[in-house]
Length: 155
Image (tube, rainbow, N blue to C red):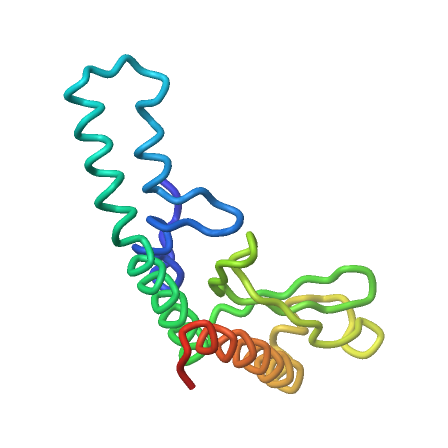
């Protein structure tokens, strides 16, 4: 079983799906399409599908609200910042849920190796760098949270 991250594991986001992942509802309904189905099984499957379709817009709203909640949880509890270096850039990232992207993190460029070096352990212990990185991550999260609120029609 894979790792579970309580800050980005939702319920309705999995039911509805995203641009990059088919929703569990569709996977479940279509699972029997290649199997032999009695008339009775087909009847119940259609009934189930109609019931879900009737409420799909509500489920989508739940998923959008869930996304906002997950994002705010991370924003209000920024921790577990991970650092990496690509070329001369030092990246900082944290787990962060967004339905419009396959990556489940948000990342920023915290600085350059010519200023902070290439030893990630030393960079991680550099309070000045980590304050800058945390601030930039929070700003990036604030933008995403504002977009999520806009989708929900709230401010």
